[in-house]
Length: 179
Length: 186
Picture (cartoon, rainbow over the protein chains, first blue to last red):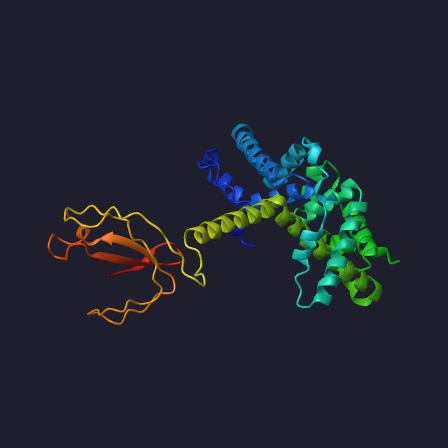
């Protein structure tokens, strides 16, 4: 999916207009951030709010601190913490009925293939639900394109712990899904 | 289990230092088990990514409450029924026997003041054509017609028509209630 076709067509906030660096970051990272937040369980509107707040914080941070080594990791960490503050909806997404999503995922040529695809994703979702919170978060951040070092920064872990957690989570999924 | 199997995911993610990555790569080439594991890890990672995308897409769709389409359909059905009923009531479908409509003389605002018979005296329906001669085409009866007796003097200028003459006006009315055709006869 191209960046322009992101369903969450966020208008560029006015306060970003003056900073070309932050504007470029906003265009690059809004979708990965939104995807991570929605997968964490936030609603569309909640995710939009969190992304806006995260970039507002970045703007203030850059104005006061001047620079940031790893802005992507910083943004994910802020967004992650903001999402944490909305604990009511935090674990909702993976607990929802899956049929609509599975229908979209199982758009195969034949009904037999569609059935197999649906079954595959049912097993996957069931396996994801059995993961620990940190395993799930590591996988979500990894799927968002973050390096282990960035994941470690977001979740406040050691990089080696992230490597172990990701390895364990992927192995569990493969075993439970009989891949 | 191979010692390097625990590093397969990190190797796939490009997270290993160069020397370790080279060692894992060499091992995977030779170890069928690790190669199989690596394929499985790749596949499940891809599936997880696809699933996250689906969760994201589903989460970004505006949700429509399930009863809204039902209500909308019901409302549309009521409106359509009402329109059909209203139209049918205004212009009923052609019956087997044309109805006789008794109407008062049409209040045509024409400045004609020729004495004649009382308006509205003879309102009648004649499904059969008249027997007297006319200069126009043969008088074919319409399937559905409404006859209204109108004094000739209310339509024509004084002296244009013989005194006491009455005209029978027939109106052909379409299904939508509008008048499609009007004709007059004696």
